[in-house]
Amino acid sequence: MKSTKEALLISGLIITIIFLTSSCGSNSRNQNAIVTSERMGVIAIDEIKPSKLSDVVDHITYTALKDHPDHRIHRIDKVLIEDGLLYTFDYSSGKSLSVYDLKGNFQFAIAKPGQGPDEYAAVHDFLVYQGKIEVLDIRGKLLFYDKKGTFERSEKLPFSPQAFLKIGNDYLFQTGKKPNELGKNGKPCEVVQYNLETKKSDCWLEINNGRRLSVSWEKNMLKRVDNEFYYGTSFNDTIYRKQDGNFKPQFIFDFSPNALPSEIFDPNVSISEFVDYQNNNRDKAYHSASLQVSADFLITRFYNNTGHHLIYDQNKGSKTVLEWRVKNDVDNGLPLYWAHALNNRDIIMIYDSEYVLEWASELQEGKSQFNEKEQAFLDFVNEFNPDDPLVMISYHLK
Image (cartoon, rainbow, N blue to C red; front, side):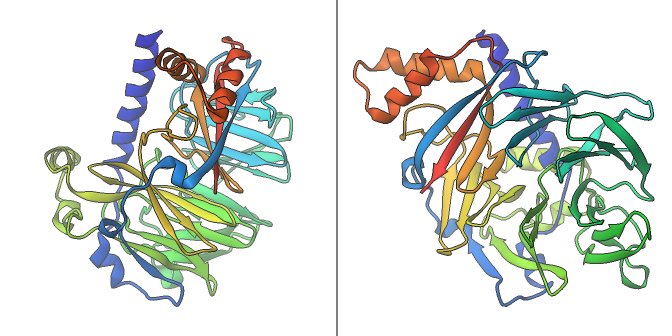
């Protein structure tokens, strides 16, 4: 069992390294020169000390994801919660979308890798709109499924975007920073509003830092909460918010004095040189994206010797930092590795059930008496069916 768990964790770390070292923006000083905004704020990373998990999280709940016919998903790349359903997509390994209700009961799956008209070669992104599912294929094709996962149709796009949202009859596409003429006066556009029928486009953000292309590992670049829109990519120290019809900076990360130097982003620097530099300069800090937003909070990740979660309280204006794998001093269960989704005030992480069982076993071996929250975690595990492949862990923010 342990070798399987180690392999899954190592695989996830390798893929994370691949996407972190394959996409790029510019550093903080470049972003400061772009544009100003009344609501923009500079976040000085070195001024925020990491907090304990219990400073941020009130309690944790666990839900078994049950009855999946393929038993175990390989890894989780993106999670959506829409209209009482949980959608989990494995882009890179199983290439499948699995749907559960919020009690963890399996509903259906979409697993259609291939070259056919109803199949996808590889998936850049997916969305759920009015109960229906849309999948963005790497070949610049949209595939449409009904609320039960039955294929309806596909449509070819005139470009190959890497992320998207739905805005009524229009879409918001992230173009992968590839050369295009979708901006004003034929300028290249990084995020564009586009209508499939009329072919009309409206550029929300022109490409201003496209020294390297984004890659397909980045899944959580575009977020929408009601009528608020947000955008962020790895190695770009800016998080954008829609204002006055365009994306403008809301936050700029200041990683000085440890920011990656601008020279490392030169197009003449190869990927291998870029990786070697990072490996030999682990004290250098950079934004590693993965954006999650709710009405109350905004969460993103950055690297500074190790991975960190930045949690911004949109109501209080406060900023909290949690180190990756920070000790779970709430119920002594799993640390917060990934923020797969943000559902109101709950950070959602989907994890392999074997890890959850292992943490419970270590807790029981290390103590003879347990507090109320620890006992709630152990009660869940004691009733758990080991055949259930995954567990949804909800970290409720204070």
